[in-house]
Amino acid sequence: MESKKLIQDGKTALGIEFGSTRIKAILADENNMPIASGSHEWENRFENGLWTYPEEDIYAGLQDVYAKLKQDVKEKYGVTLKKIGAIGVSAMMHGYLVFDKSGRLLVPFRTWRNNNAEGAAEKLTEVFNYHIPARWSVAHLYQAILNREPHVKDIAFQTTLEGYVHRLLTGEKVIGVGEASGMFPVDPATKQYDPKMLKQFNDLIGGEVPFKAEEILPKILVAGENAGVLTESGAKLLDPEGDLESGIPFCPPEGDAGTGMVATNSVKPRTGNVSAGTSVFAMIVLEKELSKPYSEIDLVTTPAGDLVGMVHCNNCTSDLNAWVNVFGEFASLAGVDIPKWKLYDLLYFEGERGDKDCGGLLSYNYVSGENITEVNAGRPLFVRTHESKFTLANMMRAHLYSAFGTLKMGCDIMLKEEGVKLDRITGHGGIFKTERVGQSFLAAALGVPVTLMKTAGEGGAWGMAVLANFLIHKERKEELSDYLENRVFANQQGVTLVPDPEDEEGFERYTERYKRGLPIVRQAVKDMA
Image (cartoon, rainbow, N blue to C red; front, side):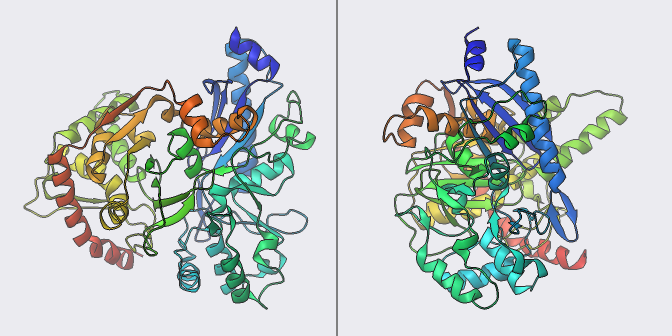
């Protein structure tokens, strides 16, 4: 009854996140507890050499996920959702979305998964003396300029997926500082685009295009700032049935990296999180800048604007899921009906029984290219010698290690070479649903304790709802980190696993073999065109 009244009074917060395979909506109460949800499955497409989601899929997914949330509210509480206290939109990070003056999308959305902007990224890294990943928006823009793509001359606005959806709903051309830092480098001191690099970029493209970078980039806002309100047209787009009222305030749109930090209470220095799904990334909030640029480490910010060292890998669970599905097919062929969750549990727990170094087996989970290891196209591989101990347990352990293998290579630079200190790291994502296994293997990979919290399972959509609540419930001048610590996670229970020394040693041996085998993958890219 209490939740019903909160819904009727509009004292709720809605977070919507466009993930790689699922769009999710979470409605939370004033205390940030989830009270209703909706989900919509979608999938990227590989068209004309690029990974994309069609514009119509964005519209359809947005409307369907809200319709399912609305239905959930109706079924649970017997009321129609009409009022919401605040809304926030999140999505997979960065990528390339550009529009002309009329707001028309000029080319299909190019996602973070594309590696086509590597040449531009290398040039910008050299000009800025600052690591620019190929998936960042500025790299995609510069690559389009270098390619002399016809649409470039018509660009009037550039944003990311959540910035696009936010603009559809509010009319505002804004972006949260965390996501902005993956569009173009941000100065942590001012929490705005770095002016020196803006000038360098404008000098670089001068005469090639009829605009300057700052003229087409969205306005940066930090967590807690008002990012506009739901317009009448936005309300009709979100809820075509016409029940949702306009005028609802919005918090700044953020990327899934930012919402992951919020969902795991990892926005303070010396804290970090690992988000593991289709891709995997580690975010470690730094006390100071690193000694030099590293191609394996992106420098971004929290939604509050603090500096973060980020290791992003394009591949995590896709190949692992494919192997599990094969075993599901075999079970069906044998006439055995095994629920998907049980299939995962059986295989993951079997992986625990494997040799600590996987018995000499190697797995590369590269469904798409991987920048950190310089593999420029997807070639998943499973490799062994005649001396390897080829057992089911070792095979599953190798696939699970592979999910964190490239991540470990990047994190080792921060933790071992730069001496970055971590008080805690929190994991979230599908790989952790099976109790203990993924969590213990991540702890072994990084050599630090790993904590899982119950709310982390709600993922970025819940983190976005928390940011929406922060907009309307924060005290004057209250910091996001204090709001999370004292008012969101104060009573949260977590499960922490410390790394097992034998697992650590085994993962180290596996990693050395993993590094030595990388030329095999690069050769496969050439030979299996």
